[in-house]
Amino acid sequence: MEVQGRIKLIGETQTFGNNGFRKREVVVTTEEQYPQHIMIEFVQDKTELLNSYQVGQQVKININLRGREWVNPQGETKYFNSIQGWRIEALQTEASGDVPPVPPADAFEPAGDLNEDDHDDLPF
Image (cartoon, rainbow, N blue to C red):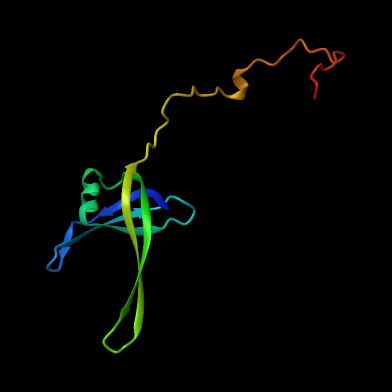
């Protein structure tokens, strides 16, 4: 799965526990009719992937959905979801220039030598 949008926020790398679990969060705002602010976490060595990105940049992030079950001290079972990023790439917002632009229709001269008596010789 993937999420595309513009980076709204990039958090600092956080370290948790005795094992040194690392997590870094990024918020991406989707560009659609109803924009969504999606928080995606990068963990362990993937936190470094965010180093070369900045707020305002358009990106595509490949994600995995993760879910966990937790039983609290009162014996109630709770469920948590997270979105984990594992790859990020910048999107090019400008045209690459490989395809020449099409001139507007009024830039073409109308055909004046049409003869309505000529039959169309196309086979379809």
